[in-house]
Length: 560
Ligand SMILES: [Zn+2]
Image 1 (cartoon, protein in one colour):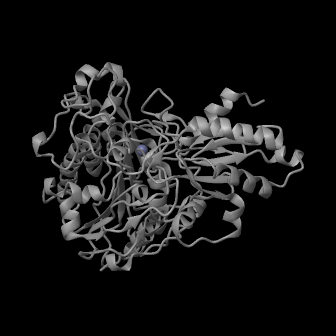
Image 2 (cartoon, helix red, strand yellow):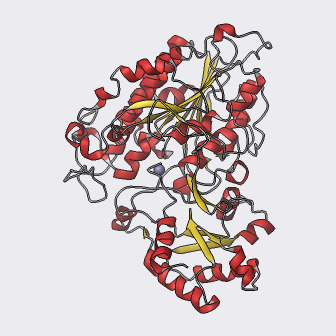
Image 3 (cartoon, helix red, strand yellow):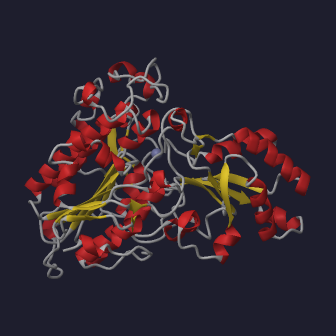
């Protein structure tokens, strides 16, 4: 039985790509390493993969004059800048983003089709990194019950482990579990993420180990996180932040207990009403804490200390929380990037010291970009807006009843996809392809929906450019839905404050891609590159096999 309110909530909630707001001991010390093979001349001792959550390409250029020489500018000026780099699939969200960077392919192949998605087999919503068969390590909550099991191919980090007979180490770090678990691949020595609330600790899963190593326990006991319980003020004089909007404007969200979205954000006062340590995530201090932890991991995990290449995957998640709350044009996002620049400089300095200048290689990219707040765009006379979910629900429900005598045909709508009940359709003596195309025709009548494609079209055609190409790369035959919808450019399903992402539109796909360090040429290109090109580029640099689902191509200009 499909009650109206149930249907409404499924349909409405689903249009937000569900944002979840959410083996063995492999810890052999490096001293136990043996020589496995003569490394290539260009082989770095350490690869550092950096993913900045929700970073638009133009954050490099817009805030350029506020960056110093040893952060972003070090990568751009002394490395290689791919200026026209894009996600080539939708949905553009964090789980698929991290999986695609590290697997060299898209959701069509790696299977991570969203942060959360409706699982057709079990008739349940699943989370991209959750795994109830493992236990939390470092917390009494369930926040550690994670593994990469839903990602069905290997990562570049897996291939490095295989190539080095498991002697090269992989350590993955992020505030968000999925930002660490997916980059680490199936063979990571460790993935660590942050559990906030009343605990404020870095944790992991029994998928990796039974107990946290000493250095992580020491870090957790060190009060490093606690020290960020202080007011968030701008790093530089706010009057010099001319590249963003007014501090007080109607396009920004608030912390619980705040009356205006303005500096200073008083974390000690807001602490208890905003999830205690969780509030750190939504400020640039979350990125600083991530850098602190990554720097501690260099020694703690003994990374980059011998010729067998190790891999450290670091994801900076706070940029996403800040973007969602304040939007891409806020003083808060500007300060977050000015501060991230300083945190990157600190990390590079630690790498110089620990691994050695020109002994390591860095890439920096994002897991998706983000849209300007549509309410702001609208006020600037640019076509933009918010999806009218009500119209869609009532009209569409009436259509289903009129045409089929029941609304039971639709099982779930999520990530801009509609999942149909194939059994109900069979029982009605209808053909699935016909129903898909009839529903698609109907949906195209709705004001906010700009394009509609059916699964049948995805099966029968091979798209090579434009929106259908992007949809097809995100369409997984076993996991995706029956109908794929695209909202009008500038239209989102989200609150009227803050920015979001998830669409196949260019504002969500265009992200930075920088390479720097050993084996990397200086230069830049405006030729289009795509996210799945990163993993085969790094594989080529290292002389290792490509991840087993790779569809991207090495960017040859980047390599010496
Ligand atoms: Zn996000």
